[in-house]
Length: 433
Image 1 (cartoon, rainbow, N blue to C red):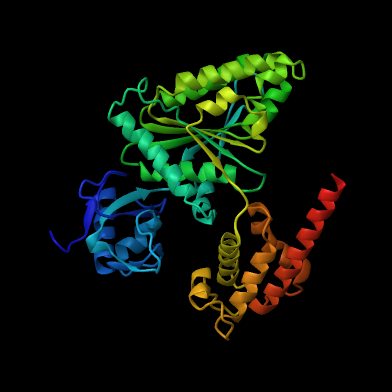
Image 2 (cartoon, rainbow, N blue to C red):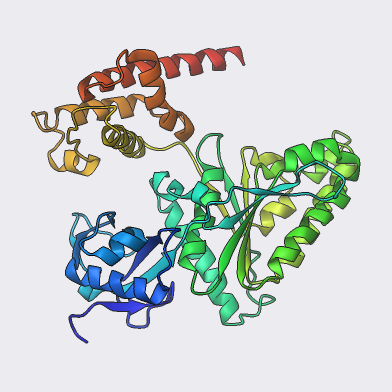
């Protein structure tokens, strides 16, 4: 009906070419409500509050059912279709809504072992969506549309499989390679992507499985038999893939440790067993790609050490670099908002976004003063990794704040000192190398 809230269930390919807005509904683990009832109440909520600005999250509700059963309702990823110069209101009545209802699995990771009599952990294994991965997606800040591109890649993989596209004519291998310097969030992005897609594709798969292969501890101890162990590892993964109700993600972190270039082995600089390891990995990848419910996620800090045959199998080879000044500002802003929410920084004060500063022409006034200080700190921080940036507010408090509670102005001074210290330590390390 015209003017009413409309709902769609598919991830892609809205036939009416209307904007699809994704709504994620986090249901409390204690809830016994039927999903159909939750969806009905969420749609009623969206009908009552049908105009929002960009990403929006409800954690408090104006009716008892949602308060009892739902942790949060979030409108997410609106930047996928709404690329505008100015932030504009989103009228949900003119959009198609895709509702994703999920409960977090609060069990920690289990371990996969290759031999019953061995204590060696071959991999860590999570059921998705996992409480441990909750919030990682939102915490990752990238300047280009990296996250959107990865979502689109996997959704296209599923769509092509649904349409029975002949993979001999149009090839895709279900392999993603994220590469770049350490500390830029590659591993976190893999976990967040798996979490996001296990929620987004809940109408297709009952649950998600996430396997993180522990390649370093496994293959350093058993290198003489590592080719056989690669095969055993993928046989374990195959057992998970055989459950067609599950969407399986396999993470090979620092994949160069498994796919060391064969030319190094042939040149005599690496043991000949490395050739068997690479061959085994490539063979297993070629077998796995026949299954529609698996995605291989890999990361590397040193791509020049990866065998070219593996690189060629990766459908997406995405560079993940240090954030820009705008990205750093966004990271710091989220950190400060969290500290104000926890009343470590008190009283709470409003900080402007980078967009708001730009619209003001970066003009200094009472409203913009502290935000401009934060921008200067972000500019000075350029070159630090995302891992270092997220750690910096903690270091600022630990090293330069002498009281349990601190004003925003004083905390920004401490952050400025902490950045100087980080830069100094990094310079000393580089000079020692």
